Length: 123
Image 1 (tube, helix red, strand yellow):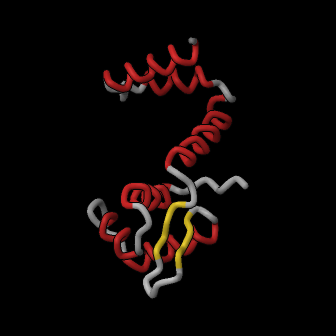
Image 2 (image 1 turned 180 degrees about the vertical axis):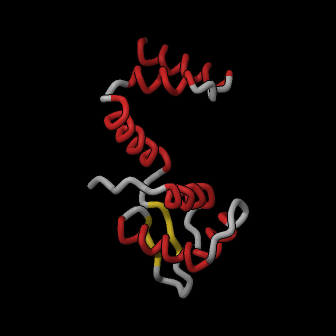
């Protein structure tokens, strides 16, 4: 089953869950509040919607529900890249990499890792 593509707000919540692991609404809210003013009930509602979409799971065994990402960060990133690759780059990994590198955002360490991965793919 392919999960729906998360919205930007949902990705923010997923990043918190990937970082902290399974967490309560309060824990997620506290982390998100460091970057922007967001109400507790907004975070709760978003997690409820994300549960319905299958993006997160909810453990209801305790009084305080605990939420966890349904997929790993890597699985979600692969899904997003595959979607972007198809929609924006016509399935061309070359065009995607050219644009990613042209943005000038890659550090020297990242460039070395890209070279290592390319060498590994060729060898």
